[in-house]
Amino acid sequence: MSVPGGKKTKMVVVFAVVVAFLSIFIISSQQRSMAEGKGSDYDSIELFTDVMAIIKKSYVEEVDTKKLVYGAINGMLSSLDPHSSFMPPDTYKEMKIDTRGAFGGLGIEISVKEGVLTVISPIEDTPAYKAGIKPGDMILKIDDKFTKDLNINDAVKRMRGPKGSKVILTIMRNGFDKPKEFPIIRDIIQVKSVRFHLMDGGYGYVRITQFQEKTDDDLSKALKIMKEESKGELKGLVFDLRNDPGGLLDQAVKVADHFIPAGQMIVYTEGREKESKMQFVAKKGDKEPNYPIVVVINGGSASASEIVAGALQDHKRAIILGTQSFGKGSVQTIIPLSDNSGLRLTTARYYTPSGRSIQAKGITPDIVVESLELPKTTAKKDLMHLSEKDLENHFESDDKTPPEDVKKEEMKDNKKDEKLEKNPQKLEENLKNDYQVQRALDLLKGWELMKVMGKEK
Image 1 (cartoon, rainbow, N blue to C red):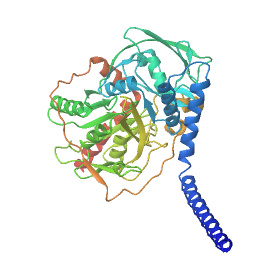
Image 2: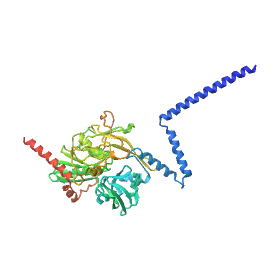
Image 3: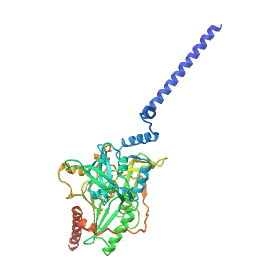
Image 4: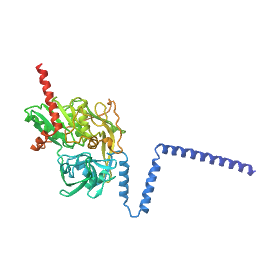
């Protein structure tokens, strides 16, 4: 009697096992499909930990785990775009000092082009600038060490050093028969964000070298001083943004705000996260009179300087003169990490008021005027005009229709009463020999002449 019942029980158990197995198989397949749909993140992380374990166990020398992790993070970020990077604690600390306008080193903005360390722009009146370093220069060696495939953070470390110490940059430039050594003495770089001068006839000249924490404050003081010197009002303004590598977004917005009517868009940003979708509009308050403005740009004008030029151009508030700008249309967010290191991550693209993305394209001048100092052959011109599109892993532009419902940021005033020193006589002499500035001044004078002729009619 027990035999038939035993067989039945066995059949039930087998059936249950089969059902359970099929259920597990189906669930596992679904989980695997979900993991594959997510790009097999877990498999990739497992691969990373396996490689790190092998290195820790079998590499010829003992390796510090943090060094491996830092190297891996650097590799991750360098594969994204030219502007995302990891900053170890010492580099992160220096970056925060840089935005205040005082740091030790040579005074150049650099990037990587096809694995070669390349100069975007020397900062005016710094050791690199005085030594003759030019935009587009390829830095082949720093002292006796080659820079091939060197990441930017390591390059910056090699170029930084105590005031008075010497570093030798080996430079290749189109027009050179062979690389040339440039010995440079390091100094404490005190970047003067704003320089200004009242030119003959009541026309103002303002040069912004970099957008720092005090740029808007210094611009306000410069405009005030020039108005006082011109007995009330400027006839026009030459706004020089050449070789300005950019800087702080909020300062670019505040600078443009001086010249754009309240409520009008200055720039907007779009990214994947909600916080990256913002619109910056001009605030209420005192504005500059509607005098004519000529903005001068070149291939060294990037990022924040392009935001200002693009906003003034879109609102027809200024004529843009010079050569095509660099074309950096991305926004980097600085994210502090737990060990006092930092992450510079590209989180958004920015767009001019009309919806233009200048990413890898740049701002096109209304009037193209080359600098007479630049070489005129095609090959040399291409080198001197290094742009975003030449950088490895850059992403393309995508013009958009300006959004109607985005987060608006009205920038707050943060004025300070520090004294702004006026620039020495040397600036006036340099302006008289500056072909592009003189053409901008001619344009302002012609503007004034047309206005006078219109009144006479």
